[in-house]
Length: 319
Image (cartoon, rainbow, N blue to C red; front, side):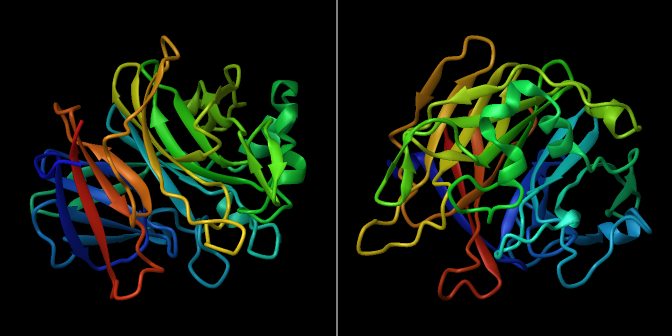
């Protein structure tokens, strides 16, 4: 990877960035999957976030803070000034159902005169995504009923980690797990296909109407699941792919590195960006700033990295 293709920075304040979206040309908002807070950063100010927002204060009575109550926020997408956020929909590490994680929510974020941002709820929290998908026979091959009772990073588990807008004001929901097809080799699934779910009516579901889905999309990401998907422009997307499992090196398995792909929802064309080496990074968030679809900022979840010290790394790549 050429040095002129990449800029690396380290931001202070959190270690587990899990979803982010630009608010303007200089500012982004990011979630940490360990709490129910949103943090606003100036892309050029590394020392601390400009502002921290408690979602429990935005959705009073519907979101609470505390042990086992985290939404496990994983990704964000903006549609016409409304910012959607999605929880992982995963179980606990022991396979226990976590209702707080079954959430798709939307907020309005606007700049105020004091240099801060005002955030308000947009509609209500949608909590029945998996139940609605279970009722749709087109998704039967993914066995979501069993997946929601399985540990997120186990074979056949459930974990949502990607969210992106569509040109028709829908949302693409990217699953890290489960994968479809493939075969078991040394205890792990290989050559499985990743699932993309297109929610056609996100604004309706946050106002209490029934979800509508397009046909499922299966992507061949070399056996990986979706860690993030971000709209570049119109039908063009950047996908961050990674293993569905815990990804810990063992005697039988080596640690696997994430990969980047370009994908067109219109043509279905999928291309790997092999010139970018993500070794040593755990990319969970990707964002483009307005008017620049050739420059992407990737955020690494460094929570398990020795010496992270309440910080995370950012890579800005020229695509």
